[in-house]
Length: 121
Image (cartoon, rainbow, N blue to C red):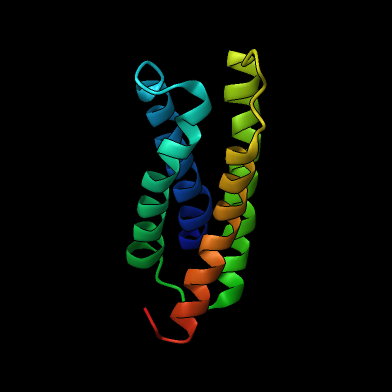
C-alpha cells in the first residue's frame, strides 16, 4: 500500500468519520436523537464530495472501489466501538439513517470515481 493511497483511504476515511462523530456530539443537545443522523447526513455528503473531488486525484475506478471498502469498514467499526459500545443508546443505534449512511459511504467514492474516469467532473 503506497503512502498516497493510505492517506486517501485510511486518513480521509478516519477524518470524515470523525467529522460526523463530532457533529453528532455537538448537535446532540439541539437535535432529537432520532433525527440526528438525518441532520448530519447532508453535511457529511457535501464534505465527502469535496474530499473525493478536490483531494483524491486518482482516475482509476479500482482505486475508488478500494476507498469505498475501507471507508465503509472504518465507519462500521468505529461506529460500533465509539457509539454503540460507549453510549449504548437506549433505543439502539442501527436504524434506517445508519444503513443509508453506510450505503452512501460505499457508493459516493464509486460514483465520483466513475465520473472522474469518464472526465465528467
